Image (cartoon, rainbow, N blue to C red):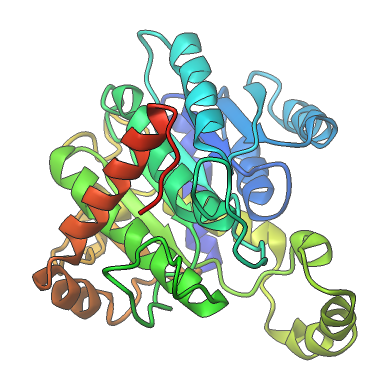
Length: 345
């Protein structure tokens, strides 16, 4: 485990580096909000775009961030990211505002704690899968022009690496095999394989798939559970889990560390010396899911340790062609919806 003292020292070092430009998708509560507050508390003049649905909540968070980081710029962009057309709109706005600029960090947590049955959107995709997978990869691909201009760009997706349990290569949309566990497993596989594809074409980019651990967030109270499940969770499950829960503030600090430490760097580009990532000694660089030190794509636990077994999972499924299949499926979905058609595969 990365000691909390190391995490805090690394985060504090951000004040000595060039200001970060970041996009936080899903930062109006929970994990995203805690990471955003950690960035505000450890930066001098960050420029941050916050994508979410609650403008009043965003206004309160921005006011707090400006109080602790008065030189920062925090911009709220309202969007329901369960529709890809809204992802395109918000990305167009960011590209317009940052024309000629750069993007150092894309941090995505939206849809993390949402639970619901299959609900198809007008675009032909499952709404939760859009939040957990399609919209995240769409954000990354559309914002690549800005990320490519940063010295040490990074994309972070918070979900559940190390919880892969299987995949249906011929039903990636889960139209015939939808369940809570299948849904989660597919999202995990598809995020990591898409990260591997994108990072292979962008050597300065590093991509992290982060498991946040057990963190009590406000989403637990507002998730779409039945009244009985909410009662059971609040009065039975939560009290049993409390001794094992990670403090939300610490979670934000740790997620900021993973988002800005050169421990999880790309193979090319700045390693913190001239970039916006906090430098580390060579021996501390993590191993990617491809088994290589500094492998550009990392599956990481809440404590900063690389997930054990991830290399084996992705090597075996990669040899079966799953990575190519995931990417082809994803691009077909994007192209279909961009034309205004409904995706049916």
